[in-house]
Length: 488
Image (cartoon, rainbow, N blue to C red; front, side, top):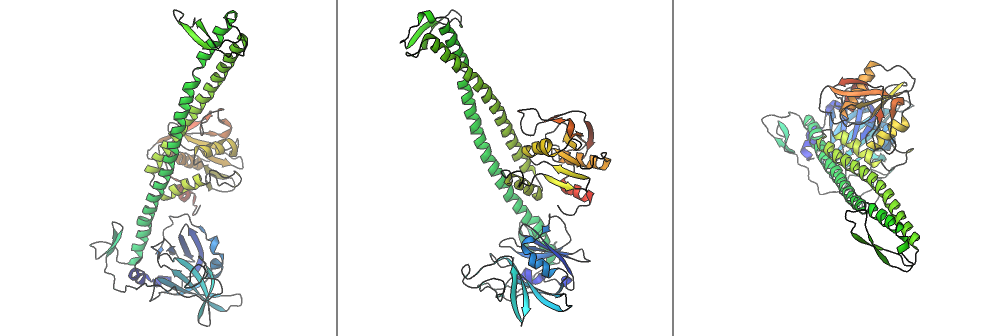
């Protein structure tokens, strides 16, 4: 971010606000305040770091546990000033906090936004020096021969060749084709709103494109391997389908043992399995008796028959895998929500973990009696429906369309409330092929009426005693709003 835009931002609205907490999401950090709807979002996007005041709650913020010391110091502290260094892209937030002895202590929250040097640092003011208490990134002279950022050391700015641009910003400003344009006919008359748009419209969009590209590339790689596996299986099936040949050999030898003597390497016999009984040459093992040769081909026939059945089953499963991969690629290409893509990535990353350490499903905790579980893959659908859910829980799935399994955990064995019945049906509709449709049919029943046939494809189940509800789809985050849940 250019220095002049950071310089223009330094916002006095933060002065005298009391800090409530510090949260994070990926490379984003959020400072919340008591008695204010304003929040300070700090974007440490590599090469383009900045911060802005926002009232949006679009990201699934969580406690910044990697910055516990920051949180302890900043909680209930008061912002006294916000200033940008005259030499580099470094913000200083001067804060004050009363300790347990009612004495005021002064701290400085430093946000370093220089390209490739993005960092957050909390310092205590001692004898007009900034002594480091903690930092997001720590390094010594072994890592950086110019300076070190280590607790209890004095903070010093990095020595760079950066030259600040201090010219005035010409308003209105807007972001056009991914670049900041000044003096536009329409746009923003303040930098804060522009920075908010840059993050939520430009940076998120780029992240989404990159993530889509990565996910689709991985899926296409899996699709290529799975297609090769299918070709190999079909070739094996073609070989195994020679089973009839081995049966004919065995039967012909069995009926002609009187013509076979030990030591023969082959025999020519009329093939009475074909019209006109043409002669056929059957290889023999010279060291085996006629009965042993016949039994050899009977065994070969049985092995080929069993193998054919197994290969045929494997081919069905492989074709299902290919269908699922193609469907996943299509879903990703159509996905419009960055957060949904992130959820999908997390699901794939956790796929190989053990059950006890893996984070399964999307979850919406309603209260002690009810909790919504949403499967994110065929494997998760199987685990959710067949292993996790209990008999009295409620199960939801679109009737006509392919989709995920949604389970409403019924911890207290209560009657199903209409509002939760509708909400779960709407979620099942959204996480299906009908997500962009209206009046989607969704079947629901209790888990005790859901069964998974042995050997069936992942995610496939049968059910009975169902009822059908026609609903309009809603996504996970809209459901959170309806339930009054602020964060995941």
